[in-house]
Length: 315
Ligand SMILES: [Zn+2]
Image (tube, rainbow, N blue to C red; front, top):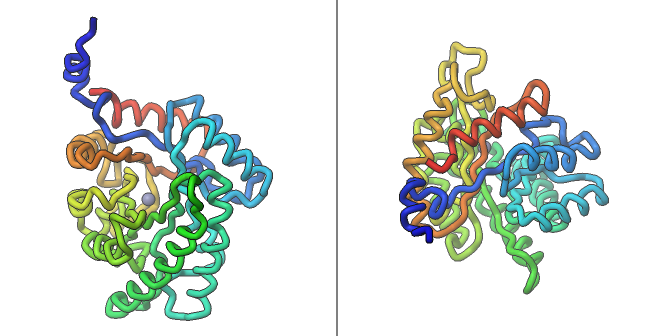
């Protein structure tokens, strides 16, 4: 008979106790995915053949038939889905933190209308990044206030969409870099933590994304945010270049390694470091390697599969 404690000890505890599950970001493998009919399902099915992914990050699927089929696959396979509306907002230059009330209202209306799509697509979370809403740093606190107001309305609509007996549905927020590249409204980790607490978290299902590139560009580390692990629902392992003289400077979702600050070994050390904290929170935490493909989607998927085998392996 196998002693389960021994198996667990041999595997360094990560098989039995790791809270982390691998996730695939479809829009990084096929950047044009939102405008390419059929590509979301095709890419998801291909990805699932290359690695046992348990989580997916997907943009909204415009075609209702493809959306329903995608939702059926997500539910059948028990996948955790981050339904991301940031691209849709960005394409229409809308921001929930905008100083222009009409822009802000349209942003909130757009997200609220998309929640139904998210439910159909099998979403566990509806996610958005903070967007911009300020001209310079002095305006940022006001912009965070406007963002909080917009998010409260969006979360109320999410609650109304979640009927008793239906799958859980929450709101996920991705803090961006504040000063160097994307110049998002939100924000440094303490501001992000304060914001989701103000929205009622952890009782309210409003959570944060821990993205290594945004943190790094803000001069922070994952420790800045995972000390509040109960407020973090997912991790993006994303590389970034912090040398302003380099053409790849900023949040460009570059491949792990030079000229960025993180290679696969660094990602693995981050995972090792935050694993005990998340293990205590008792939640399953999807981890995504966020690297934007500029070539063949098949090669990108094999690269990600090999990378996950090094970063999230039983060790
Ligand atoms: Zn990210």
